[in-house]
Length: 327
Image (tube, rainbow, N blue to C red):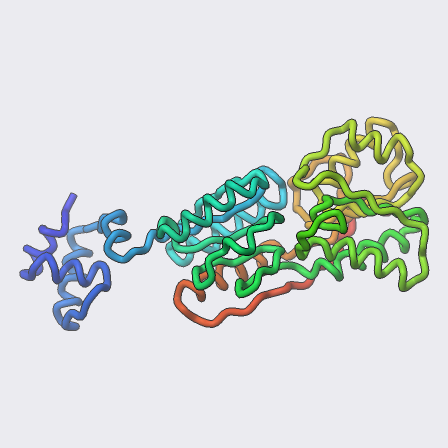
């Protein structure tokens, strides 16, 4: 395999000149640059990426911090982010924090130590004071002072969920979600607006027959016995808004086991709009997030920050994805 010495010899220049062309670290005459580039092409020379990163202080690596990458929405978001980054010649490092604050702080240190070029952060922990200002960080579904964020219109999504359940004929409504998104937590994320929008819409139309259930923070995958004890055992509502499609899926499976007919007895609306990733025997009516567009916005915002360009936060519209769970 040809190395930088071979390129320099063929082009009749010094190794330092070839290095400046390869790494873009200094001025080179146009004629010389074109000659070196031609030789590189002829020899099939591939620069050492590790050496280049040491010279440029760039790793071409972006870290995406998520609570759990096996959550259906997060995994789909990761897929689209990776695809968008590849167009910039960037690689994606997926970091599972398990919703642990200490792990997230370690990953922040990884950025400040120049081991990645940027971070996409998804957290409901109290880490505001540890986020380094001036570094390329984009937050998903969470506002931090001085850091851009990307989210869907969660508030309108909550309103649309309530409206959809009422229009489907449900009268006794339930919202169920992580307490990190509600009044039990000091941390407010954009996701908390799903709950607020749900309640506000019901108040506007003067519908008071509803209940709010908030389960323990960080429990993305609820055990069957919890769903049974909180929903099935005391089933006194006929319309459920689950804070995610993942949760809606888990609820539907438990209701099916107890032969509770969906949507005849209980109607369900989820949130995310996951395509083909959840198998419950029926399609879930969901408030769909524009996942591909959210991913593009995350990557574009981060690339602008890396390039030193001005950036703004982005909130994208949601849409109703009709399914069998509310018919």
